[in-house]
Image (cartoon, rainbow, N blue to C red; front, top):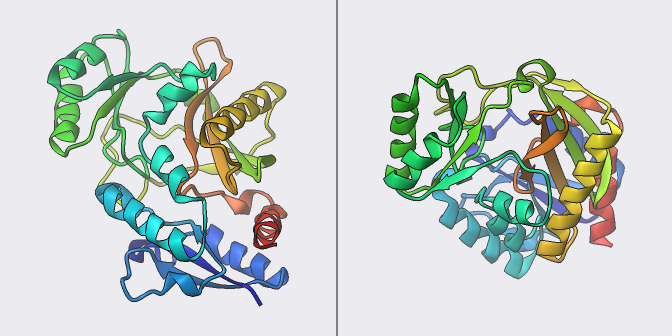
Length: 291
């Protein structure tokens, strides 16, 4: 029986709703599974037929260590998604490359120092969102009104002081009513979609492992599917590979058309609870990779 090790983290134990569904589906597919903390030095990852990165939600504070771990694992086992994908996707500046490739992306200003941060915060007159370029679970992320630029600057300065770059985006008001739409792709094929309620009410999110979210099933529109397909195509061309799993998070732009908020290729929840057949699709995609 092939053995798959699901990479998690100690703080996520018992908190990943996808995990029991995925493990049951793997069993049904004749694939054994285990769960291990990516940072546990006692784990021999080379004994696995495949290591699947799932709930490694604490990586952001030690990204270099996480990527070094991924490269070591890849030397002895099939790692999904692979280390080069994780390296590209764990810094949100990948969005700039996707925008250059013609993908509709939420407008973004980038800041590596205080002067760039000040300019970024003045780029849009209304509410803005400030967040690090390296983050997971929406930590250190907040929405600020036009009268709270000092507070926005303080959060940005704290992020810069932590050694991370800052990204500033206009808050898209349609998000409050419509929410986000997540499209989950398995081996480049759309599996299912879900709705995520608006998250940012003003206070910075953190320092918890992740922000609690309101998740419900949703049918993707033709326009959302077209953008999702374009995002995947651009990423696959850049990475020269098809990821095992991908989550495309879309929000309505100022004109109501879908734009990319994030492309999650590292440790996204796939919200398998929103589609009864989704876990089986993940298991089937993984079985195909195992050959």
